[in-house]
Length: 495
Image (cartoon, rainbow, N blue to C red):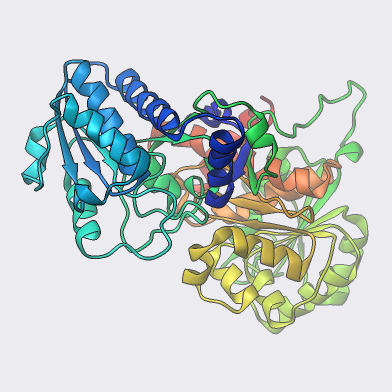
């Protein structure tokens, strides 16, 4: 994904119930017939797939028994009128179609639209397959016939377009409900569903296109967003004054680097420096402290073996990055306790989060940056529980521990005290490698040192980290290292 590709989408995200309320508002209060909205949805999806694949001339549509299936019959009818070779595959008896979906089916059949009651291998070689099977109202795991159809869709070798949401994906959480379609393009309507952007959502949606179906903004303004998408112009560092000096940009102290894990502290420190912190120090094990800055002499490295030895460094620092490579030894616990007690702003990551899980406490001065496994320990849940509803997990982390919670992963979430999580779309699978979290810790700490408020620092840090990862991945995702991301940070932070 290009670093700024999500700027074309609205920032406000909603739950499925909120979008259904918008739909009812348009029908009941504004007098827009439901069938008219269905016609608009089908037309929007058809135009989106034609823009993306203008040479295609064969199309198949899998249609479910609800309004999502009705959208599919509209698409099939429009494709037929445009000269496509079309097949529609109803799932479930068409006699059960009701209301607008039944009307859309009748319009398709009245246009002599072909209907097949079985799915042939490979959908007879169609170029585009439209998933109009299940909509946003799914409330249980997909099973039986529907699961088999989704398997057939995912086995299809051509292009898959999902109508509103990939079938089987939870619109609120981004979790897979037993089985889900993997689409190349998802065309979403009325209001953007938050589940498209986190958890399994990014892997199943492909490119996301939004169409408001020409409904007035008032139907969306009547609903408070359940979450928000981050954009590339949200939060930014101001230009530097010509008379600036290093004291203007803070002093980050990285605390970590147990024996065997010194690289984590080094990467966090270097990321803080590349983000623009005026000074960066590292407090680490004395045994490797003389070696830690050999390749980066700008880092000031101190061998520390007790909490008392750490205190002078704490006094000089303006921001702490606590946890990269820290471990959970008695040494780690002593440094953890000293850092928490000193009263400075801090970013808490890695083993510092595991130590926090053992002795929970609240603090408004910190930014917590757990991955799902660490979040599970902090909340006393399993990793699967976290991924089942990442929005709920991020909010629960913030409520329980205070400050800002950054739940890492596909569609990283940033939760602050206002209760509206922000969602970041930057980043790529190449970043699934060691040290990436240490880099993020350093980036956020470096921004805090430059006087960026905590929530803004977390959002901006996640964005810069993801953009740098995307820039570094231009040479390929496999083999992408945390150090490559650090090198790309300077470009991204100066955009």
